[in-house]
Length: 263
Image 1 (cartoon, rainbow, N blue to C red):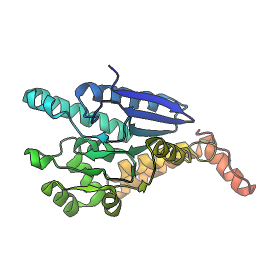
Image 2 (image 1 turned 135 degrees about the horizontal axis):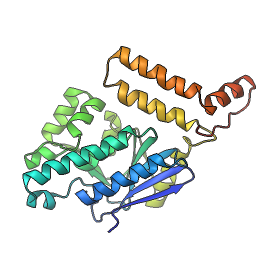
Image 3 (image 1 turned 30 degrees about the horizontal axis):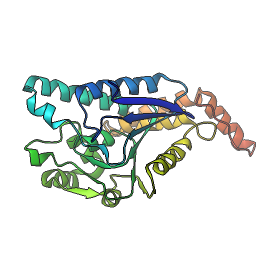
């Protein structure tokens, strides 16, 4: 049964969650998401990844509560461990990852979105938040760790302790979302996100540089400044040894638009 679809279009990998009605994730979905992330990572034709939902009502409502209620603690622990590993794989992939958030994005759904580099929501009545405290548990798929890194400790603790859910405009105000797009339809929103993603694809953008900027920030934020600067130098050297840096410098000096290849 296919729960995750992968399609490559114009240099953009579109990873779609397909588990109606609410795209709740199970171990099987996480296995398929894990595989899709790896496929996109290894595909040289992919420069940007967009994670999206198949419908308009839910981006993702989090883990399947029925499954968690019936599972024993041993399975639950390993389920959470694998989900963490999958989202780390997404976060560590040296390609820009954009979450196209259409519909409610709550609980584990927001935790999935937090593992993406950029979050774009569709304007409307949808809600997001981490309400796990209302179930007597904490956000266990990275929410306590990633939300605090995005919002800071005080704001993150308050949102998770109250279990508040809020609209996408509020998410934008908080800095949780990068932008909110008003669209008349599901198709119009998808087109807008794809158009946004294409700006990071060659020949107009050096996608390898974008990917290594991501790696420098993701890893550098977790280590000392001195170690982060050392990482930055090493990544810069890798870019200097590639073709896009040569093209970018030459184009600048020749007063023309660069034609990048992602190499």
